[in-house]
Image (cartoon, rainbow, N blue to C red; front, side):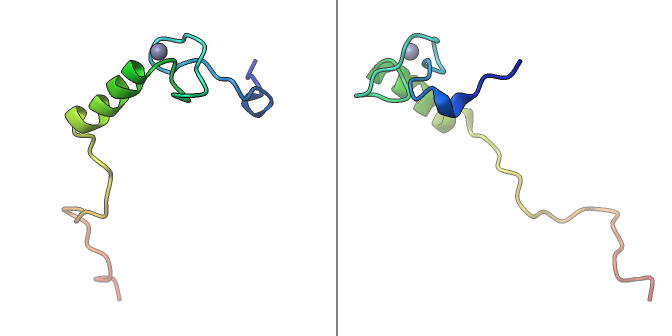
Length: 62
Ligand SMILES: [Zn+2]
């Protein structure tokens, strides 16, 4: 079953699943917020952007 998230304003901390604090929402503490931030900064997430697809010949049909 999927939980109706919108009915629950207080979501658990995505890092450690502890009850989140209003002060550091949606995390339970500033530390977890930092952990999440580091994940993004250090993880170097690659955002799928418009890239050239090799081997795709579009427009050569007409
Ligand atoms: Zn936490």
